[in-house]
Image (cartoon, rainbow over all chains, first blue to last red; front, side, top):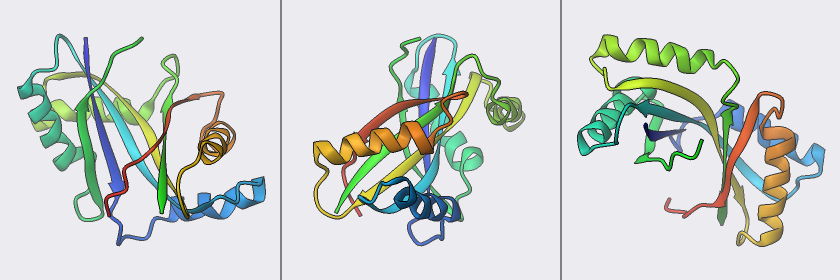
Length: 85
Length: 85
C-alpha cells in the first residue's frame, strides 16, 4: 500500500477568507506570534502496491485538474508519503 | 519572515466525506490508480523574524487547540517551512 500526498494552497494574490478568520482568532487565544495565515488543503491518495513514477505523474495530473482550482490555487507539493499506519 | 506549516488530517477511523467524494470522482476522469483519498488541511503561519523553538511550540499548541478539532482530526505535522516567495 503506497500513499501520495498532494498539497494545495491558495495563490498568494488571492484573498483567503479562512486564513483571515484564523489569523483574526489566534490573538484572542493568546497566540500573538503569527502575523499571517493561509489555509490550504492536503490530500492523501492511496494506491495498491508501490508508488511508481507513473502513479506520481497521475497524481500530479489529478492535482492540477481535479484537486485544485488552477484559477485560485497552486499545487505546492506532490510526493510519496511514508506509510506509517 | 519565517513560516510554520501545520498539517491536519481526519482521524483514520472517522468518515471523511470530502475524501470519499474525491475518490468517487477520480475514476470518472480516468484516474483509476487510487483506491482511497483522505482530505485534510494545511496551514501556513507567518511570523516576523525567525522560527524559534518557542514559536514552534506555540504553533503546536495553536494546532492542537484551534486549527484542529481533536475529536475528529489529528495534527500530523508542525514544522518550519522554507520560505521561497
